[in-house]
Length: 361
Image (cartoon, rainbow, N blue to C red; front, side, top):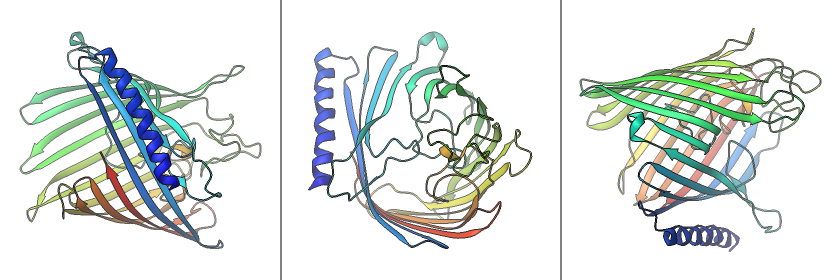
């Protein structure tokens, strides 16, 4: 009943916003979309009791074209203010659950910029990715970004993306900010589509400053006795993905390598994986397997994947997942992690199992 009330409230708020938008008579109309996921989450770690949780994620968004070259997108989500997760754990005596602003973004695509788009606000990750090695898939960066794509030939294209983001605003000290530059190229080789690229994530105001989001918690990163970051971060990521058909089934192979040039040790990470099948219609399926290693100071831990090592860096191991399309817009999935955490010091086994039922509209 509580889940129903939360979802109903979010839907009602979005429909009210959509009606208000329609009253303005936006030329592109108003689109409402959302998703809901129910998850059973079990965690097993050496030296700790097993944890079993039931969790929900509810998101709903509204988007519309303000005029011919300007769009606006808004999204509400369940969960806490954690930057890498919208999950809300059930319990606490049926207490009311939190709803927050997950996205509020303007996208400007003027004809004068020849296909480039400028984004401003809190946005879905504006950069091309092949995996979640550097950032969790739920991270919605805040600031400014530009995206540009250009066809090089009938079967190839080039992509240039950049962004400037704010992570921490300080009144009496420099802000913590992030500059991102990305260059990528896609082409068709025989029956496979190939994407390769490089991204540079340059953080300012990290070393010697308090850890982001939670004081004293580096989420795997090295911190001083005073709870300050011990390193700066300038991460360079190289990524590659090839997808096509294998024995008449969709198949993709991907890899990513990242290194932090500002750390003297424990600065590297990588992931390599493959996916067979693809969710399209009822009774379709897909399976994925990947192995990853993310050393202590390879990336900023508070933004790294929230599931693989319990959130953050300093781990390695295997991930297996499978998804099944029950019917249109309704899926079941199982994600399993068999990893080790604390690999820079005292290594401990960490395993996690996530069973999902999800739907979207």
